[in-house]
Image (cartoon, rainbow, N blue to C red):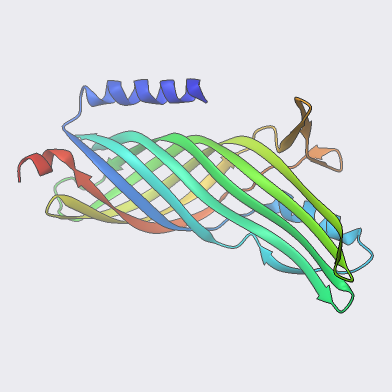
Length: 238
């Protein structure tokens, strides 16, 4: 991770030498997540039980957050960005004899680089196409509990981690207001799969496999939202 940060920082510093403007941008919105392999894994696990728990949450859409530091020159923007998002799944069943719960909670964070190209630099309403590429570290907490006649019979919690490269092309429509720049955003995130989830026991990495194949996070999907940027050079001219 330290090597990734050093590489990204060096890239930003080299770009800054040729920049005309420095700005901070915060973007948020809703992410859609495929999670195909995890859905199959959890469904198969619950299918082995002697009862039929109900799927109540299936990795629903949830917020993403992108704080970024950008530099611009001519028609281009580039900079460092950060990604944070989360989602989860839940199977449950409750009756007079007890309660069963299986939860999968996912959180993902990671640094990246952002590049944008303005298609109409002379217009007040700007249209930019861009690419976000970076590293996404995912932490999954898998919790399984079973109560029978108010006695806890099963209480297990496992932590799995994975690291993957993500690539997100998108389009941004901007509108300047004073020192601020508001924007709407839509993009699609592609996850370039890594080695899959693993847990650690006694210093050894143990992969999470299903039918002999590694299970990956599935953050690929549509992203849409908006945000605001503030220009430091414009603040100095106030």
